[in-house]
Image 1 (cartoon, rainbow over the protein chains, first blue to last red):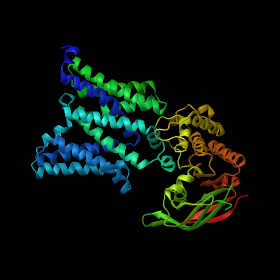
Image 2: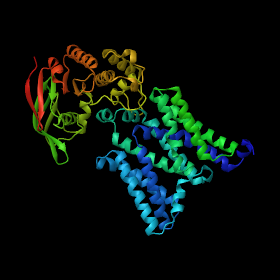
Image 3: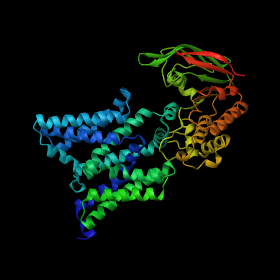
Image 4: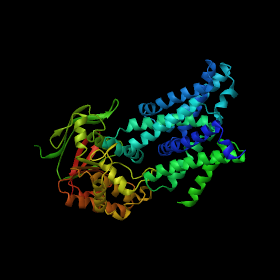
Length: 267
Length: 231
């Protein structure tokens, strides 16, 4: 089959469009993950999704629903919880990660939940995207882009110097918690698109590459979107042409891009 | 109208159950340069947070240019009157030009949310960059600045609103000798050229800072104790 043949099929059309949307919009969230140093947080939310998945099976629903609900609750609580107990998000993340993993393993044992079915959450695929997943991705992407556009200077200030932003009257907590919430949702969606183990390809790698070569904030946003788009769409098309796994090909695209950016701009 | 730019009357503040500032009284006039010293945890930064309205008082009054600070609206007002340089020179990892960083100091005054910065904002930022001697670095990425250059940029950002009070939280700490000298010269120039500006500076390097200052205070047990007038 040629690429054009593939693109005649609605399933592949939807997947290509999803790659374009996810690649260009979710990479903006990668900037937040890098600047707030939330790499532990994304692991914490992934493990929380395991617990949610196990609970989902226990009460008789699909594990993905349980996982998504757990991620939504976790993301909503994450920012306020960190502020309330006065802990760095990374520390709160470590608590959540180990706690939720331990609770999930206990549920596997005590509740007789099939572990392999829950761990299946970690293996997403863009070709299994349902119409509901697609619309969810579209809505979340729209919210992310709108927030970055409407609060362009405010997000810039919070990421650049939170103390100064707070003193100037920027609603730092609201912006921070909104971004943390969207980060959680973006992680949940990425899990479905490329699988949990490869979410960095969509979220982190394009933003890391952009952070390396951008000189201004505007360049950072533009490069992140552009790199995310190139990785996701390029990886998807290449995977079709060469009959390779989609998630892994998208990730390889991201790794290559990051490598090139590091070579281009060595410190 | 009071002659004092800043008055603190019997103020108390702290975090949770722990009072850090305890019935503190303090007055400072326009144009004064005051150094505040004290051990770590003595409450120096807490004092600044309180003046800036970032930490609520549990008792007492803050009066800034005859305005008693009671509500959020009052603190919104003083944002136009106070410039603030936070502690630490280490910047984040966000790519942003020096000019843009200085311009952000004017957020809320002439631009915010859907109101975009104007050419006037950029001109103002360029003017203050020139003042601190960083014009040639205006388009440089902040991440590439040295500690001393970053502090001068922070001072330009604090001055962009042309404040009446400048709060400097350990601006000299972690800088090399040469950068310290440049910064002291800049602060001396500020004193001369902006005569009404009240400067409060938290510092650990009293010996170097003393020639610039009018008064020196020691922060201890939540109180400011005057330890002498500078030469």
